[in-house]
Structures are given as C-alpha cells and as structure tokens.
Amino acid sequence: MGLVSRARGNRGPHLARRVALGATVTVLGAAAVFATSASHSSVNQGRRHDVPVAIEAGSVCTSLTDRRYEVSCGTTAFGDIRYNCTAGQRVRCPRTAAVTLRNVGRIPMAVIVVSGVREGDRRFAPPTALAPGSTVTLRPRPEGGYFFDILVRSVKPGHGVVKVLAVR
Image (cartoon, rainbow, N blue to C red):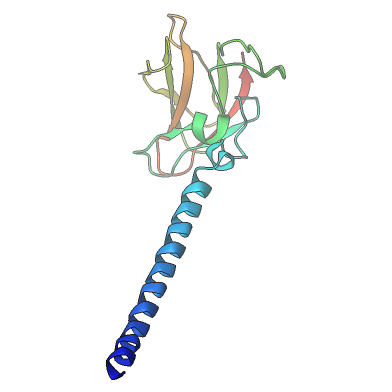
C-alpha cells in the first residue's frame, strides 16, 4: 500500500509540471500565430493611410536633416508616380510624363529622378539642384520609360520640403 501511494504522490507534482508546461507552450504558440497573422493582414500590407494612391498636385515630401541620406518621395509622400491618375480615373491611367516640383522650404535640395523602360529597370538621373523657392519640371528617361520614384536630399543640414505643383 505504501508503494502505491508513494508512486501516486510522486506523479502528482510531475503531472502538474507537465500540464503547466503544456499550457505555457499552447499560450506562446497562440501568441506567435496571432502576432504573425496580425503583421501579415491585408490591412497592414497596404500603403500608409496618409499617402495618396497616386501622385497628385499639392503632395509634399520632406527630406531628412542629415544630407547624406535620400528620401523616396514615392514611398513616403507622393504615392504611385508611374501613372497620371489625376483626372479621377483609376483604370488605364496614362504614364506620367512630367512632374513639376517647387522647393517650399528654406534649405537647398537635390532632386533625383528614378526611371526605366520596364519594371526592374531602375536608372538614376544625375541630381538636380533646387534652391528655396525654385521650381523644376522632372521627366523620365527620354527612351519613353516609366517614372518610378523621385528622391530628395537636403544640400545643407536641415529639413528640405518640395511640393508637387503639377502632374502631366
């Protein structure tokens, strides 16, 4: 009798540890699945809500204060630069032929056009200087390519700001 009760006495704490370990693993597993599904949901994969779907007049892009780094205005502020959907149409928009920018800040900026003849072909134009208050019209490569992005960089320390005046 003593042997049986002793065996059961030893199984109790061991069984309790197994149950606690199993519950912990289950909770951690569920948390990992939840975190993974939340970060991969269709709501979070879209663009930021303050970035327009397509480039439009009035959009503003700000550079970093560190002049060693460029900012992608297509990703952070302007939206899709490839197509000119400013007429309200969202299907079969024509390719963007030109974008007119004005430096509305106090810091001189360098503006770089990224274009190419097809997806995956990214070519960087030489930087265009844009003094405060100045306006520039940017175009994709002459061989009839796509506008993929517009990069901005401050020439002096401080935040530079460009504003889209027109899209053609």
